[in-house]
Length: 121
Image (cartoon, rainbow, N blue to C red; front, side, top):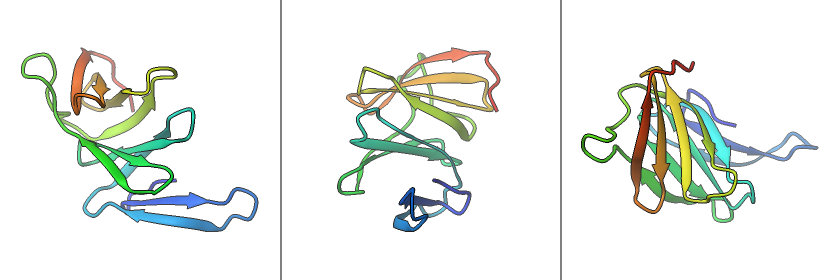
């Protein structure tokens, strides 16, 4: 789970005990998603960036910022939802109050496409 206090908490489902905690200072977190094989997860919130972690080590593996010039730019608002592509490990999609859906490429380290118009909250 993630929270507005910047904490990422890993829980043991049956016991309800917190197994691990990661703190992202100065970031209110609104969303988290796991790649389908469980090997990595990503978080996002008010920092307008995407942080990708290795599940095994719980270490930060990559931070995705901004975009490519006139094709995409950095998010202008907080990120409220995200989802890994179901089969392409390097693709992640985010949405927020800036009325864009952004497609991120982990291999390139930034957003590579955007669709303007959809308002997602």
